[in-house]
Image (cartoon, rainbow, N blue to C red; front, side, top):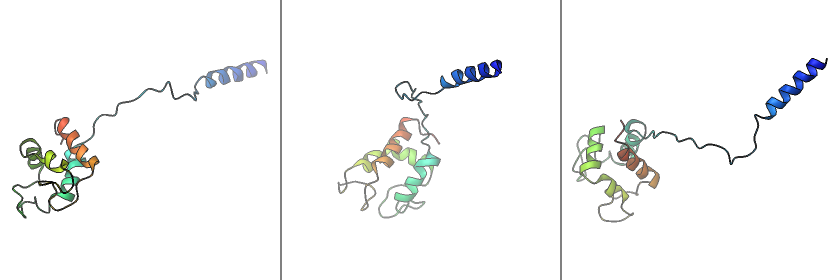
Length: 119
């Protein structure tokens, strides 16, 4: 009986050391960037850009944005981030005649660029 009581007391002491109600000693975990063209960027482009920047560009659009390479080229060489970052109603703002993309969507495209255009 004494050995069972001792075992129970030992387990209680060990288990009580596993709990902590303090958040001050928690460790922050950095989650790696997961912004990729396939998971994030393509859906934004398809939703807001393809109506003019399709396989055959229309409404005066100068290029297609239907592929990873097209969009990457537009970011690197055609000022895509500048155009989508303009204030609503500003000259040259994209999407043309539409509503400015959410800042979250713009930030994803910037993040995608800054992390070497993950596919």
